[in-house]
Image (cartoon, rainbow, N blue to C red; front, side, top):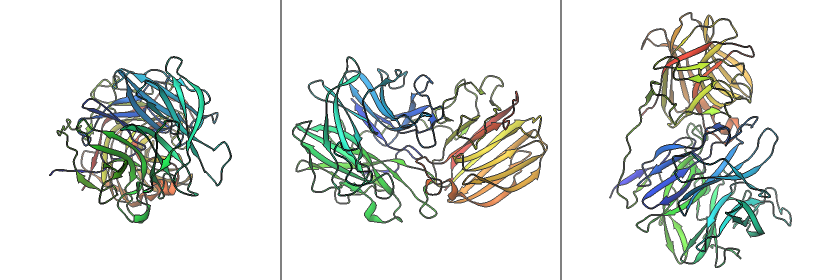
Length: 517
């Protein structure tokens, strides 16, 4: 009997949604203010996943201008119907504060995907799609109950038919269910399934923190009435306490394998160094069986485990990616993201062979803007990052460096300026200079090593001749539990001219990220 380890996709890959097409599985996750949006992964065995692209990879699909932190793209759903893949999601907040739902389509999950089909009169978040046996399509999401909220954040799940000809909602909105648990908030993340002639509605309740949960109801008719299971919630970790290795489990989607097994993907977090979740919300896998017309999650245990018995599918491992990006290809690797939609190409892989050239922009890492930044998710509790860059500053305003980022108000920056190398801790929007050393070399090596919440910062003028810049920095400020929001920590390179116009740039020779034991 072979086992697998959770999470199946580590790091800030929240709100997983899954679908199967024959023997292939596809999974997507939320991306909030980061661009490109909605990474898509492919698997043959539900355990080993490889990223094959992003659903929203063009500015015409995703305008994140002015989008606040942890807003933007929420809780996407992926479905397949008659040769077409559908991804539906909520754009939670733009600069105007508008909230709208839309979907995109493709025949090839690697892309390109269509431009958005914006849905009119489609309130709420966490929109989902269901295709019935008769060919009809339905959209579900949440909203405030039409009769009014009985208590703060009380929501209900609604549904309406989708006209696949006009790509707009049609007919009546139906109120399906307002959850199983009394006076618990944030009924959301709805998905409808049809199993042996019955319609099942799975939702999340309790918010996405410690009280998160998965509940279920069923009906003989898609429009209801829906009956909640007496075993609700069918999955939660709130009763396990905040010291359990996996917390805030919820936001689930289920899939049946070609062998007749059922599996659930859900989000959860791995706290460390106390109740701190620097990794954000990650994607987990847990088995499901059906008994007496209801699903039972991980029978005999009822929880998500760090290790479990593998699905009865032939194992398919993908070629492992390199820990080090030498920037010797024509396009950026799929692990890289920008903050908000880039409106100009401030990066280049062609100007200098084997280097990423990052041009300085006036925008800084302390503003809600699109700075000159390229970053990737933290995916391990213990990790090391190292990079080599070459920079010729023209004045004191010009700065480049390595950043560990939660948002514009919570971050660590190793900065290279004209005559110094600095470490700056930014907490609650206030800057704290932790270290500064004279430095005049155009070439610099930077390194960070972390062991849980203990961060060590190094620099070097020559390869592997590391000097300590600062030790024992506290990583907790990079957790959403301190900084707020919904995303995990990002690590990357930035380049700024601090409000001034500049034609300068930094050349990055390599960027290496690796997990540590």
